[in-house]
Image 1 (cartoon, rainbow, N blue to C red):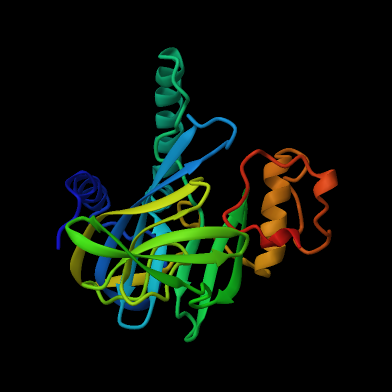
Image 2: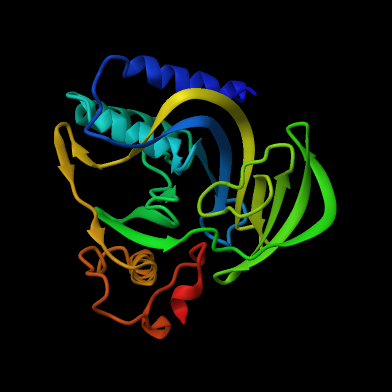
Length: 291
């Protein structure tokens, strides 16, 4: 099994750049034997069908624990953990942003963080731990493992030369369509998805606002699966605040609805009131925070 060539180049570049440099203190949870790469595309504004953004999600799978995270967020945190990381980040941000604006393009900062959600399945055993952020505040909460209830259908299609079968789940306010491969007997997938008799190769919601598609896969030898700390800057780390999933989602929805007034929000001290929130056109992947 091999990596998609494009992403292999990117990962080699980053690995060489940081070779020999301790990035930050890391708690090793398990050792990965497989690594999967998913292209994650999502509509930033559902009223603007052309505003589609992309990420690269890495899924590490070990004997007991798996971890799903954004490659670009990892790259950004790794850079900020180096002595000159903040300087490189600022200089690259100004240079590239100016060039993009001068060409009439939407500015996409280099080394920027994308999906901030990190999902640790079966950590602790039988549970799922999720870390995420709202602005500059970092949170951690516990979630159910294998929380989707799937209905499997006879429909098939081919992804990366693997025959995949269709499954559907109504999960927390969205209907998700997944395609999984029996030939890869790993009951896992990107983000919080799992629980099928084979690796989830592609999954998207019925409105096609969010889509994960496998673009590369490889066997690895004892690659550490680490619990990532909060990287603020070189040799400066923060802590995750404990919360609940619903409180986090409500806080994130309020933050997205009003970036300025919600900057210093404290989770759990307000109830979600849709009539008072300036909800953006796009919604969260999980919608059950509204109940």
